[in-house]
Length: 383
Image (cartoon, rainbow, N blue to C red):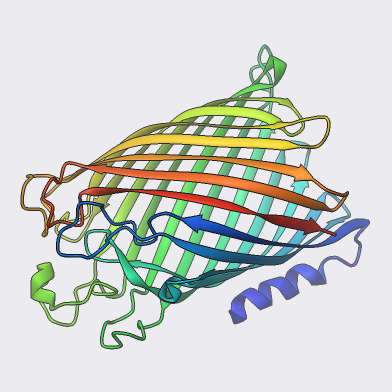
């Protein structure tokens, strides 16, 4: 955290020549209903009423500040805090605070470089060894430092502007021991990721994009949040063997920016995870997605998204008794509508659907798949 505040101080120190800026507080409140808070299969035997719905309340407050400085420089700071409280399942109450600061400097008409730092203090829903949600949350803090280099030009004059962005991110995460099981060690990790994004613009505001990222995560201790003796997980020692994983992510998309606030995008994504822990978590995933947004003359907005993917694990999971390799289908969809009430106040309504299919058919297994739906409504304000 000290490093992030130091970064902010360095950024702010360079704003003496600022020519324009903004300071925009914002906030929102809302109430929602989630149909399956534990994301459990409805056919799970041995558990009374595995699918449980609950009402939750959400509050968000934040501050968005930015300045333009001389010679093409820009600086920004963003603060955001969110809390979610469940009426009947307080064990799932969660919060999150993020502070992000960055500086971007453009030069020569074609080049730009930037540096962003982000600090998080959050708690999240835990998962067990097979990715099944647990009935408790885990607090953690994380720091990201991300330099980037940008270029744009028109090497293909018959088409349009070409953009290239190279990004490197270094992340350090520190987890607290769960209060209910303090003997379980925290799942601290360090992560490095490098990414390249290419965009080719075409006439009539069309664009094609290609993005590839390679990330490597090294855990300090594999046993974090899993519980149980190391021998059950196939570990050679009882203090937890370090494990690591590499993620290759590839995205290709086609999009159109029709007018300000109105656009659409379709694309395909592929993920290849190479897990260093006996390939236990290695998988291949491919899918399609579509998303878009429409802004009407009345300033009313409607946005939506949908994605579908198939995931196949490389080896048999420990709790999977009726299939050689675990396979999943992942369907996610959502739609959001906003209605301006005043110049600064909006009402919104949001619906999300998550469906996970599985080749696991045993009623005794929590890996059968599940369906979870969420409806959320509220009001937001910006100043």
